[in-house]
Amino acid sequence: MTFDTIVDILTGVFLFLGAFLSVAAGVGLLRFPDAIARLHATTKPQILGLAFILLAIALQDRKLSTILVLVFLLIFQMLTAPVSAHMIGRAGYRGGIIAADSLLVDELEEAIGQAPELDDAEVLLGNDESAEARDVRNE
Image (cartoon, rainbow, N blue to C red; front, top):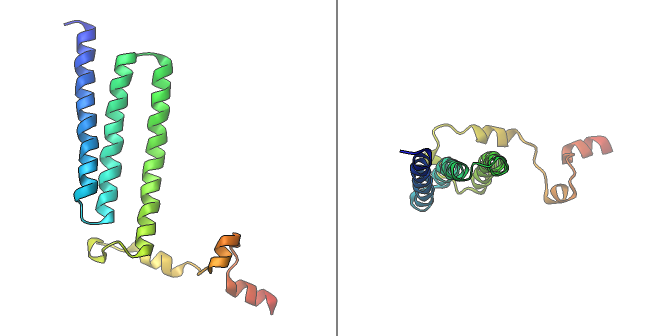
């Protein structure tokens, strides 16, 4: 077996694993019952699937410029996918679409209860000062 044959076999295996994990993420998105499970299904296997596919591309091309771009893509995806899933989960929680029986521990309820209430005008104007603080200052 030559080196190129081994690289081709590894590339095929990595492409197959990446495709399988990406399909598993899509199936999980369609089949899981609530938003929390769907977010888990779309972030975990999707990142690993992308990593396998990028590794297969790097093995086939083996140029430094290509590898640098692929590393940048992977790092960008690893930073943005969990953060976006976290924000979508928080929005879903605040919107009431998260099933309460699917949570073992609800740590976010206490944090939201302690957060100051802002009205829509304060949010639109970017004013972080609460209404109570303005009332105390105006007295």
